[in-house]
Image (cartoon, rainbow, N blue to C red; front, side):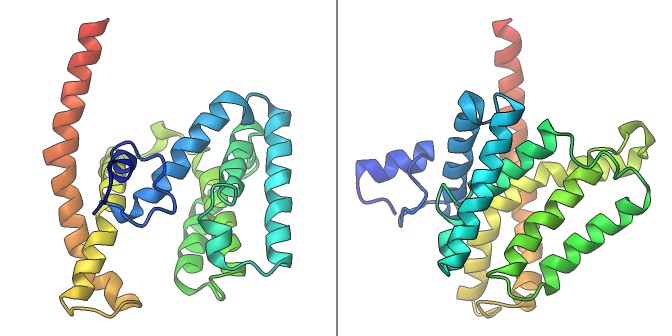
Length: 229
């Protein structure tokens, strides 16, 4: 629990949570990183194609230097400057329309398969696996960008909407649920059994968050938005 007013303000507004020891929602540190980059990108990092290009190269060089210095995963993952690599990669996919040739149907099969295999069996998660995750995620994003929504079945669209609606609640719930699962003695701290034991309660909790909190809040937001026009 936060022990001072600064800690409570960081937990309320998210800024300053990266590196903070006292977090009401443990994974919320990453939201601090995201919000900072959304501001930086809007102000200057992605204002032009070439600024985005130089930003991406600077990010790559930074990580090469960190690898040469034998920096551990924490130093290449948590700090704000380290997160520059995936954000700049995503910005390049958008600005330079990367993956325009990945329209063949075979990519729709290979992209998720490679992503799943990397997540589950990638060797050396701390180094090569970490960067393979970024590349496989980028490949998947580039392929999905070219999917024509009109060609997708209505049933698949509904499942896609359902999964998308649960993505953020799952992000919020997975850490506390996993910690509770370990504390209750249902699973060890690592391994596939922890994933299986925590998955069902995490999904249940995420569904409750979505329908009991997010849906009513969204209704209120739309009401306020329509009244302000």
